[in-house]
Image 1: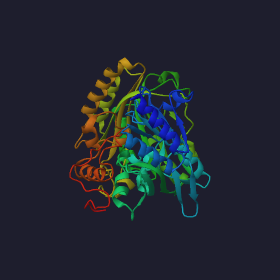
Image 2: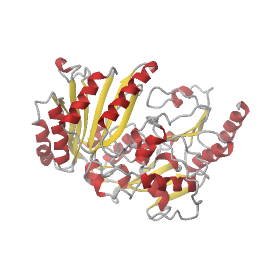
Image 3: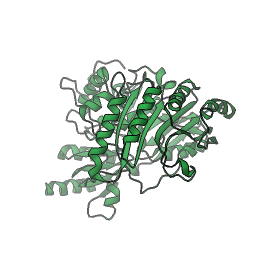
Image 4: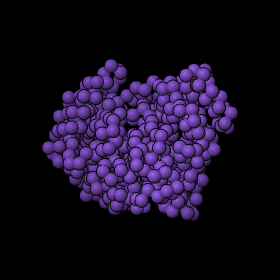
Length: 470
């Protein structure tokens, strides 16, 4: 195996213009570290391509040498898929070209960019893409999984603004995909994750989003208030998107000391529209209770993405699901389970959907949960690896208690939950169609370090039609 690794490294150095990092390099430890803690894999080599041709070369070398391949955009994989033990990490972070068409309100962005980098650039023109809620997330991961963020009710998912992409498939080919070209791949990458190739750049529709009314509103947590907040979020104009977190108050400087350690409802809100109309839309939330902290104000949209500490690498146990109701009984259940957690910080996150998300047909993209009313995630952050089993048991029991209706999961927040978890993200016909497309373009499952979709055994090969409507 050692000789094979040396040969792979030599091939990479000869084949790509970008950087090739090995365990002997002083930058190796930093280069192999992703956002989330708890993962300590040591790849044989980290390749940083500078263009699509470099990516094609890395993919071809990994395929021909039968070497495990991990693809990293921003390194935020909850399941640790951003790295490999003994394999190749294809790190896209050197690919940051950005081409903004201000008049046409579109942007081509390479996959090494983070959401914050793209939004900082487009903010200069009062334009934005609807990404998530964290600036350091790579645009590759969030886009391929769907993308649920601060503009979700007004403009939909990130994939609803994806107009085209360039990707390298397992055969090393560089393919262009859009609504008219390679429609099967275009359908699959809008929600199907990294199963189908390495996207090297994305073309997004931009929206006029500059000044917004937004920020943090913190309220005391009770079953009545949580249920009322969710009801108000569903009834609010679509310009308003909110992320509500039921959690134990950390000792944040803007909170009064008496709130520290108490259960609170910490919310992040964005009204993307007229400021006066936004004040009217947010008034019912402020009226639910005397706020513990109210930092909602007119601001530029980019201010919702503050800088993050580079040394922050949280370790967490988590579960993701979709719900159709958070009434007082469900809210009481949340508070009960949060009180039982021994994590450093435990949280239930609620994101009300609807609006623009729900107006897109469920089969139009590989994101199949458009009819669900809200996404809920439960998590416990902890410090020591030997605590993992305790917190995994807690999130499993919590998620089981909360479950409603048909099982569902948001692939970008899915941990290592096996095929059952992936199938919850891609139910029924969505899984079947993705498996056929997977077999067409990656029959040997080269791209398997992801929430993996197994290639269908009876599928046709590239150049043929999969028979599915596009």
